Length: 453
Ligand code: ADP
Image (cartoon, rainbow, N blue to C red; front, side):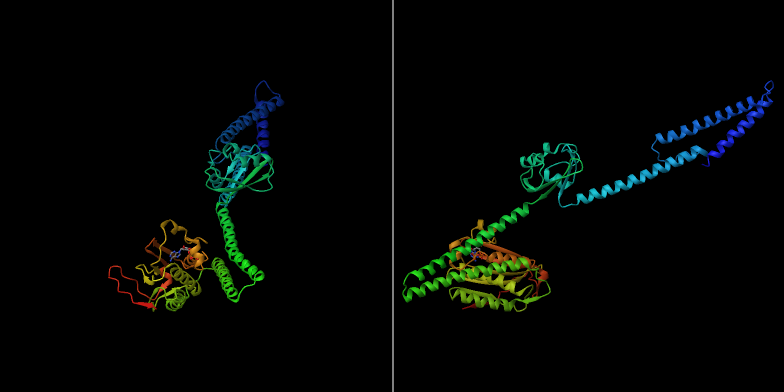
């Protein structure tokens, strides 16, 4: 109220001065008239002054209010100051709210789900870029468009129109490449929140799991049916001692087959469920190969020439049981699929970049090109009956691939029909030590071989 006193004082002084002037005007010796004149004059001056100050303030308000409000003295100064302060306060609040909205939208943008906001008329209010990608929308151009004009999947349109949002629905994206799970929630006054998720990968792995269970059931049911048949035979038919022994041998074979299958399944489950082998446990290759050689020799029964390399120093960082399982699988495959008289040769070399390569080459029938990409799939067999006859489960190469990948490496398969096959485990340099890298420019020294009888 600091402006009030000066205004009263100014009016009083003007009235006083007006009164005195009124007194001095010749012919008007009525003091009241002079005082009235003075008061009117004072009001006039105040009105002109107020109009000027008010005009300046209005001009400032009409503009962008970026600079200071007019800093006049008195009432207009205070008015200008207070209006400016209120404006600045409002601007600060708007800025804070805008900042919060931006952060909020960035958080939704970072969401792993597509998020779309619809108004009460199902028009798009806002959507994040993932939702735009899922539904093939343009976040800017398609704003305020009715969503059902743009997302025309019949299941989605029916879902939105029915308004019963108790469960998610699944639709294909507009390009027909992905499966989306879409869930809608109502909020506010008729607005809707549409959440979308790309479940293509989940669908694929669910399908794989279903196939896997079906395959396992099939693989187990076959020997089980055979066993049940033999049990029935033994129970109902009077067998001679020779027949009984033969049936028992066949039953043992089927039981072994089931045992091998279960053990391979357990190996796979273990590989999938345990952490990757650390790179600080060094496994010498020589004892592993010695063990594999014993098994290979037994399985071959002298029908093949087996050649194993000398790997005195070589070491691989990882899990010895896994490495043994992978190498054994490759060598037993080579023995099982290579006809009698064939040759199976293991070799170890360190590549120029330090990577270690353990190869198992055979002179077997080879594998046609079209099968190669699928060989490591579970239960994939080129020749099902050959695989089963030789005790295969169809899981061997799948286990090998898992093992080598868990060691940071890869399985390389080279094969041609009639030319034999070479399966190579390639380990990265960080997991290999104990042998100098092979210099590619120099002629390779003849490898010393240890042929097993
Ligand atoms: P299986 O138990 O049937 O041998 P694997 O996963 O070990 O299963 O191998 C998958 C398929 O790859 C085999 O069924 C076989 O057809 C083919 N295969 C694997 N190793 C060889 C090999 N050394 N020579 C020819 N075919 C092979």
